Amino acid sequence: MILSGAWKRRKSSDHFLGLPMAKKLHPLVREYQDWSPRSAKLMDRGRQVFPGGDTRASAHYGPYPLVMESGEGCRLLDADGHEFLDFMNNFTSLIHGHAHPATVSAVTQQVPRGSAFAAPSASQIELAELIVSRIPSIEQMRFCSSGSEATLMALRCARAVTGRQKIMKMEGGYHGSYELAEVSLIPVPDQRGAIDHPRSLAIDNSIPDSVLADTVVCPYNEPDLARALINEHAAELAAVIVEPILGSMGMVPASAEFLTALREATEKNNIVLIFDEVISLRLSSAGEQGRQHLTPDLTCMGKIIGGGLPVGGFGGSKDLMQVFSPEAKETVFHASTFSGNALTMASGLATMSEFEEKDSDRINRLGERLRSGFNGTLSQHGIRGQAIGSGSLSNIILSDDTIHDARDSMQGMMAAGHISALLHLGMLRKGIVSASRLMYCISTPMDETHIDTAITALSDSLTELRPHIEAEKPGLLI
Ligand SMILES: Cc1ncc(COP(=O)(O)O)c(C=O)c1O
Image 1: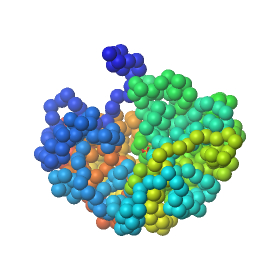
Image 2: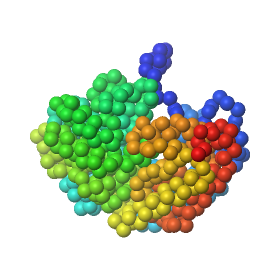
Image 3: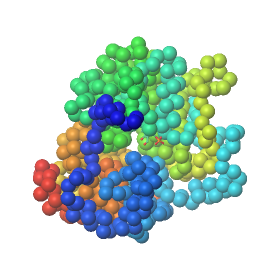
Image 4: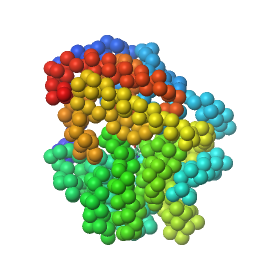
């Protein structure tokens, strides 16, 4: 039997968030269940056909996630008929929220004309032209079907051009659903090693030792340590890959000093610097690199560039991207059945054409309003907590310690324990959808009134939670 023993080989990073499983049902969880009976029933059916009830781990939370039925603009409707403001936006990918009229029209026109051809289309050229015109570091690009594929192909490009094997990634960085992309995503305290030499940690028992050995883990936001590690491993490093804002571990922005240190050290050692802007591209029309005036060698994209349909993209200088030319002498093979499919390209082109600098500036300002309102509310309620992030991307962490890397945010999440999960359920009942890790992002249909509604919902949720915090996690009270 295949399962025997193998699972014990390596201790995986236990879930540190979420609701306690074995204990008596928490009264606030009971309220959530009473309030969402149709979702509960559908999820019972889901559990028959999907492990855990859903087809995607990141969207799961306990006791079960709400089943959504429709979305329009910044509003969502669930199976029980509740209406929500959507601050999740499919994990930041819906820049215009749901069913933007220009996107609906473009996709509706494309559907009867065919969805995918094994041939180039004018719309893929147009969307690439738009992206290339906005992001100076991208002279040429490729589309693919997911952000995971984008980062994977960027890493392959780096290995091919440098002839080296190892990849440096950040502790707490997430680059997709494959082995290397998740190494040391969760820096488990008793396993992660010293800050100047973090260990390569497997996210679960499926990660081969060879992948861990090929990954050098770098502490986030530590310019001097990063320089030292890059110099130490320079001879074997093909690439350094970094998210300019550490998304999965709490929307921790990289300092300009840190990104500059990575740029200088990689340039000095002929290592390919890859910015994973799958999330951060929404921060300006040229992504976070545009705001920070930095030039990576390769950039990975995804999420917003597909206008709500599955997508990925990667690009850089012509010199580097030449390895993907089928006409090149030494080529990296990139096939991918749905790359540049006509539906995604129509959707992405319509969506990105309607997303300009003035739009990113406006929703970034709304993000500042949200963080400042959340911070004021947490302090009025005497709760240790803060909203961090950058522009339209925010995360609440129930800790008042400074959060500058994944270790800090993990510490905060562990200290808050199940209270974070209860706050998420409370916000849902008050009509605000966020990621269960309390990540909130803003879409262009939102204005100040939507932000203020979320701030009021936080205040009401904290009032409801107060007696439970007093009884169950008094350390969270100031
Ligand atoms: C920074 C980053 N890179 C890559 C990915 C992978 O993208 P996808 O889920 O489209 O494969 C994600 C997904 O959330 C991400 O946040």
